Length: 320
Image 1 (cartoon, helix red, strand yellow):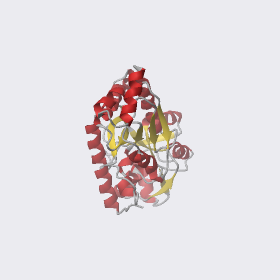
Image 2 (spheres, one colour):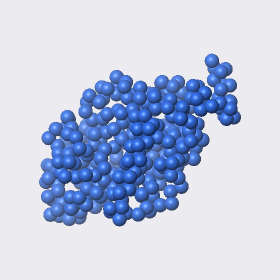
Image 3 (tube, rainbow, N blue to C red):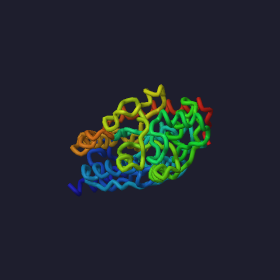
Image 4 (cartoon, helix red, strand yellow):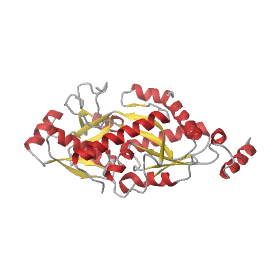
């Protein structure tokens, strides 16, 4: 069997094997999974969890390598330029769908040069403030912001989906919040706990420990459905808002990767979504595991890119 794999790998390298034959033996060597998010964020943690599962299922190392920079596009560009053989993957949240509308002179087209494999997580998100803040509810936050324009701020981690959603929130609520950039979610979460920043977005799975400890206070669900963990919190719909919601995580391959290889990885991601550990975490109410097909994920990516593009246009934002 090892001899067959070695021969098959050599033939694959020479382009002799078909995509289907390559998929039958894939992978025959370690796989690199690039991420655009720094270590410790919710996205990073979920990328590492699915990589560990794939490593165990496919019997080869899946090595997660954070490569932040260039608004999150540095890792994506490296994958877009990589050989389309399934050995370099990209793990990303919705930021990948904002590259074209936020980043000028992008060296690749994320909708053409990256092949969606599967969305493997969907976070239940929150708008949060410090447990030390004077306002206890989203209504109080909005009232204070309207009475004190420019005195409150929100956290960002570069020009990405969070910034677009926050700017749309400001516009639709008629409030003036000042953007304060941070390297990533762990950093702006600590700033919120210290009451240095007044509004952040974060998944429940990431923030719950600090909510329970009193460091953070949830104000609103970043979505349209009520939370079983925080049933009293209003949703975006409750506040009459219609802006992009949610934070998901998914895997991408370089464009042109043979579909049998993409399907093989997607099938294992679907198995991950059905695993006892995933079902246990879903029952806790902070995250779901869709395990979508490549076709379903492609449609979601296209839809999100369209929605964020419409928001950027409505705000008059241009790539920079």
